[in-house]
Amino acid sequence: MIIAPSVLSFHFDKFKEEIDILNKKAEFLHFDVMDGHFVPNLTFGPDVLKAFRRSSNLFMDVHLMVEDPDYFSDIFIKAGADGITFHYESFDDIIKCDLLIDKIHKKYIKAGISVRPNTDIEVIKPLLDKIDIVLVMSVEPGFGGQEFIQSTYDKLQFLDQYRKEHDLKYLIEVDGGVNDKNAHEIIQSGTDILVAGSYVFKGDINNNLDTLRKCK
Image (cartoon, rainbow, N blue to C red; front, top):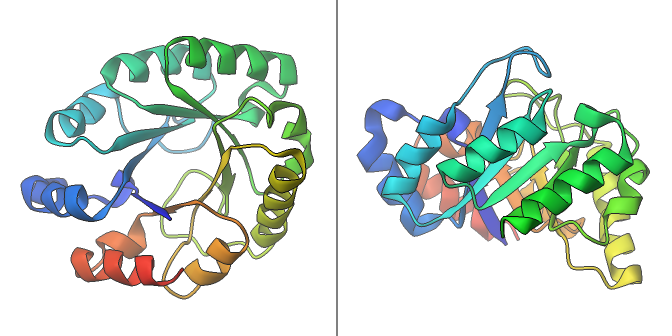
């Protein structure tokens, strides 16, 4: 199980203290990049990623919630991303998604595809044999602290079954509303990567990360 704390909830006034904990307790750091257009919020630029890159060897997991993922992928790869996940809905076109996946792979970076909660998961089936990560949004993208959408479990189970039936290697990632109450069921549904922001950074980070890991 991979835990990917979302820096959307990170306390930047406690940078040294919190990054030291994450370096010991997590495998990924998750960056929700929003442009204020694809979703109604504006978050991180590449300089934030660079700051974390200087202080951590964790896998830098960049989730682009932007209208132009082709443009932003270049910027965040240069800033130190290890993985770039973009939304199918940014293009609404399998061929364009396929081209961006190839572009990311040519730079020796992991490529991921994501879908909004209301998007049929089967729309990305043509990409599943070449993708590294499938990120299932379990809340509406744009803001932290939302409740987990129950229909997410059906998508996770579909992806896990499809992976087994076709002997594929992609990792299944869940982002949104993950906590100690639902993590076990999320994992049992086939998830490999848990993105958690509000849950991890509210209160005792050490204890929250330990509790999340025990949920498997």
